Image 1: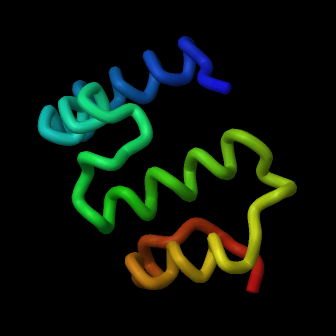
Image 2: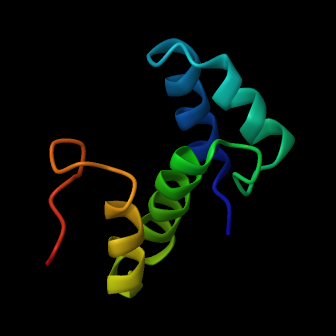
Amino acid sequence: RRSTYCTTAHSKFLRDICDDPDALAAIETDPDGGALPARDQAVYRFARAVATDASAVTQAQIDGLRQWLDAAELPPLPA
C-alpha cells in the first residue's frame, strides 16, 4: 500500500532538504524506484520494506543494504 501523506512528505524532503531533483524525477517516473541508480534502489527498497512491515524485514534485506552502505551511513540494524 502507498500512503499519499508519506509520499508527499518524502518528496518534499528530497526536493527541499536533499536538493535532489534527479532522484525525485526518477521516483515520479517509476514509483517502485527502478529508475534510480543501483545504490539508491537498494536504500529505497529497504526503506519501503521497513515502512511496509518492519517486523517482516529479513536478514537478506539487511545484508543487501550493507552491500551498498558503509557502517557510518547505516542506521542501527540487527546483526
